[in-house]
Image (cartoon, rainbow, N blue to C red; front, side, top):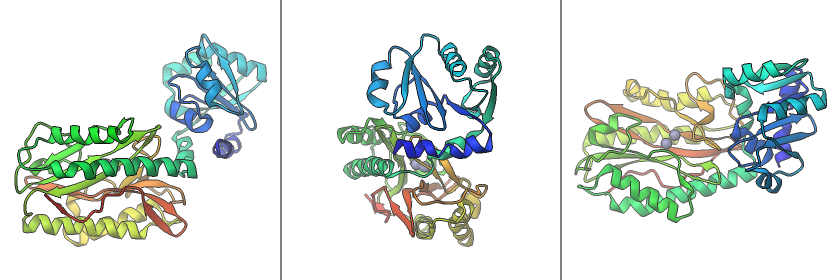
Amino acid sequence: MLKDRRAKLERFFTSHKIEAILISSMLNIRYLSGFTGSEGVLLLTRDRFWLLCDSRYTNQALAEVQAGEIRQFSEKQDSVRELIEELKLQRIGFESAHTTVAAFMEFSGKLTGCELVPINANLDQIRSCKDQDEIGRLGDVARLASEAFQATVGLIRPGLSEVDLARELEFEMRRRGADGRAFDFIVASGERGAMPHARATDKLIRSGELVTIDFGAVKDGYYSDETLTVAVGKPGDRAREIYDIVKGAHDRAVSSVKPGMTCRDLDAVARDYIQECGYGEYFGHGLGHGVGLEIHEKPTVSPRSDMTIDEGMVFTIEPGIYIPGFGGIRIEDTVVVLADGCRLLTQVPKELIMV
Ligand code: ZN
Ligand code: ZN
């Protein structure tokens, strides 16, 4: 499994004509080697790899990392340099998206006879298509968070503050085994709903308001992401109309997903529908984003993304309409792409909930 992940680097060895790749992003190190510590560096050639870590992590690395060699360092860059010299490497790729200018300058100053070749953020795209182990973990954490929401939704009533709702939801996630919340939950009631990323405040929820709740959990390094908009009391005609449009956009996008289409075309399925319904100017953000070891990762599902959708990708579908002075509605599910469509990982039904 991890060997298959490392094999995804092959195209960089070829395209950049390099003998080795130096990985410094801890998420990519985890993905490629299994090491879950917070400090270390990974050097990979086509058929071998070395994990370098400090003494805090040596035993952990020995337990977590199979097939590779573990080396303990007291000074990271010096140890990497020694290894490079030992292997007589001359062209090494590095993650330019995860390397500071200062670290690059310091390290390149120590290396003689070896060229450092930048590999851009495309390297992170090796994580876009999830393997079965990852899909299992992403499904588990999404289900856990959905169940926590189901256990919390009954608490929503006039007089409850946004932040108390967020706290209860996080508590229910932790009770179900989450390591924590995926991000500061968005709980946006009434007119605050017009702000797509409004964090929970101590504002009290009132009767007649819509409440947008965007939440997720993290477990074993993997994230979930889901949004519901709930009506407190009977929603007005306009709220009802807008909810149906957002739901229609969401459903159309979910049923359109298939490998081979571009992210841009999927975005357009939802965007064009909202536009046709007359609300195009109120849907400003992209339709979705990849979810995995990060809450926002590749692919980006937006009008500007020409990435092709492939089987195994996991991303969100989250259309919304946000109207200043009125409020907002967003509906979000996380899906995994199958050979002939997609499957929802998030579990709460998206019919309008009235409390
Ligand atoms: Zn979300
Ligand atoms: Zn999202």
